[in-house]
Image (cartoon, rainbow, N blue to C red; front, side, top):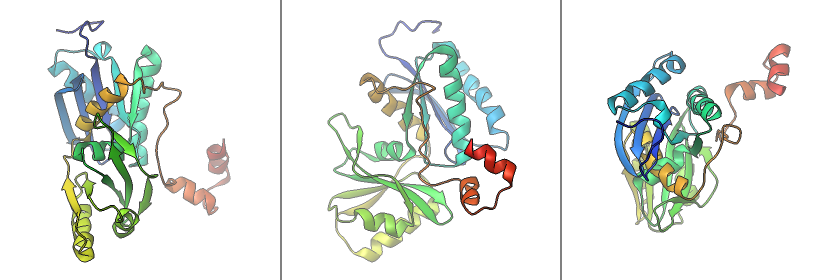
Length: 254
């Protein structure tokens, strides 16, 4: 049983991913995954998340106070889902002073597919679009961004990076996205480009990558953690088009 201060040299890491339609949770000790769960979120995700976390910790005979590092997906992904996961981790960090490590969904996807010479991570953005970003890897297998994350069609995402010869495209589970990637790659007839499907359990990759970042001192606080949205929310789009009421406009500007 682990209680209070963890005397092990390896920190206990709690990883949360609420960026997609499913909630993914994982607990690791250092770089070793202890247990994870992956389940479809319901409409009361914000209410259920802490119960899901406590249930996972209880399976390992751990309480939330035993956790040393909080790891959370900061996007891009679903706006509401991201806010649920980030708010939970930020609240716990603010109350306890525990460090937070933010990991983007694109970083986690690349990490799960690597290491390789180069990986273009592609995440479903819905509306027939995807988020994408190109990564290389350092000596420890940590993804290193080679360009900025963008939102586009699959075809444009591939076109942006297809000058790379030895390139892996990594998709995190959406069948429609994977099928579209394969279709575009087949149409290009370009050697050295291939798709690697990764597991849906993004929290697993987030936990392991967070440990590597934590060892390098790349941690944040509740005040410094920022979301990676890439594209504006529906409310921001409507605001720019003048489609929101005056009270909502004033609230968003504040």
